[in-house]
Length: 412
Image (spheres, one colour):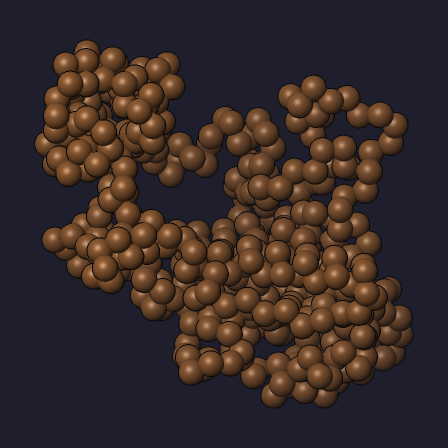
């Protein structure tokens, strides 16, 4: 954080501020990616996040038997406390209500209607805590004709148009590599909670907020939608690595002697700088490439010329050359290069730690920085129910005798 302050020409004066969500208590019923990412962002902003799992642990833990598939759980659940509750038992439901009575936020991303079936719908919990922000993440929302469709990242990619716009025109559609829809939903869910907390500061009243994955990802199709609109409503073809709206050229991934580089020009200055780097200033007066529309119209020829030139270079040499000319470009990096990226490690947004279950791993600390605020130690995710005693007994005040009775009753 001090490095950030120094980079901005700022020096801290006096004591550091608390983190923005210090004092906010979040009850986290999130599972897989969507909900847990929203609450991870809250935890890293200073909130106390109590993750509530079923007795066997949430679904993500089950993936631990498949290679390194437990890493995502560790990535999204740092800096949380871990309790178990059997919400199919009356005792478990009552304990959750006790948690909710003291919480600022309750977040879940179950199927629509699941919380109501458990007797924990918003109509119930707002009677317990009128100041509560009740956040619900779903695939399609709590109402509408698609409400009850099963929603996973893959199915939302298919339903949303992400798959239809990903891939090459002469090949079948493919999913985007990352779980875009889950995380877009999680980010918007975080934003909805923050907006509701801001309103509560003004009105004193809690509220219900919901975010649908389908609707979260739709704006990301903006370039493709532009092509759809510009063609008079014709379904646009997949554009591969070219611009989704076919409105920029050059804009592609080009071949090098040992890899690939992504390169684009979004201004005439970039185009002129590229031609200068290529030693092809003769193309400045070539009628095929004068102006953006001409370059788009002759994009195949343009890509062939550029790709022939880029093949003469190694990936890193080409990137260095393009960067020196201030041309937007980046090497296509492999995952190990990204995991060990010196830039993110130096900024502290990636940290290498010894995780109690996974050993030496790299985990994110979140992309949000709060200059002038206290630092945040990265606390690894814990085992199922690791904080049952401290949360239920030490914090909620359940006596040792009651704790044992609840345990026998199957509350956790």
